Amino acid sequence: DAGVIQSPRHEVTEMGQEVTLRCKPISGHNSLFWYRQTMMRGLELLIYFNNNVPIDDSGMPEDRFSAKMPNASFSTLKIQPSEPRDSAVYFCASRSMSGARYNEQFFGPGTRLTVL
Amino acid sequence: GENVEQHPSTLSVQEGDSAVIKCTYSDSASNYFPWYKQELGKRPQLIIDIRSNVGEKKDQRIAVTLNKTAKHFSLHITETQPEDSAVYFCAASLTGSARQLTFGSGTQLTVLP
Image (cartoon, rainbow over all chains, first blue to last red; front, side, top):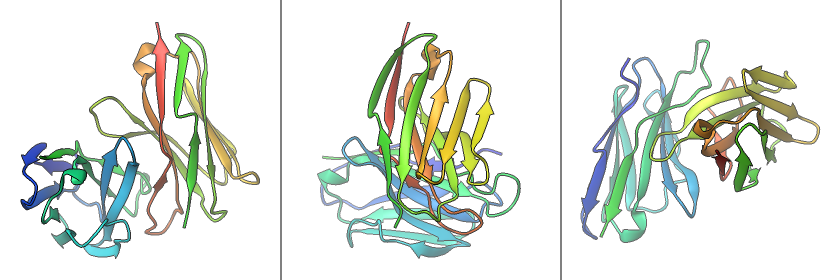
């Protein structure tokens, strides 16, 4: 298995632009999580899905952020419009809700976002 | 909701010495406690976890202890090596449900050669 796949790995954009981050979870996993990591705030959960349904989006900072999971193998996190304070590393993680390792979250490589 | 506090935020040890990182949690219903290691520029990766029906778990040089009464758990690394240098995160959640992990703020461990 290729693990959790994220794209792009790096994104540099200008303030006000729309940014779309993409995630492909591990095949067979039915939970997907979006995190944001910064030095100041650490690792923050933004939103998570079970079976493609958003369960808890209380971590989404504001209406500029939105996330979708149209099917079991793809999710997007969109920021529109982007601001410099959105600069961070965004991680996607997935988890199986069954099996021997059902609690373990597997993280993707992250997307480093820089908003100028 | 759950709140996890982690200490210390930075820790430096000499190679070969032991390192201990401590976490406390607030929700007494939490029953799953993983530890993640994140090397510089890399993704967090699970290194060990413990469930509330177990007081201690060991895997080679790393061990985790859990005190449910006091609501704290600790990571112990023995015979530290330079490759142990990384940020370590503790977390807590419920198992058997769709609950998310609540992470601690992380500990930067530096093993000095």
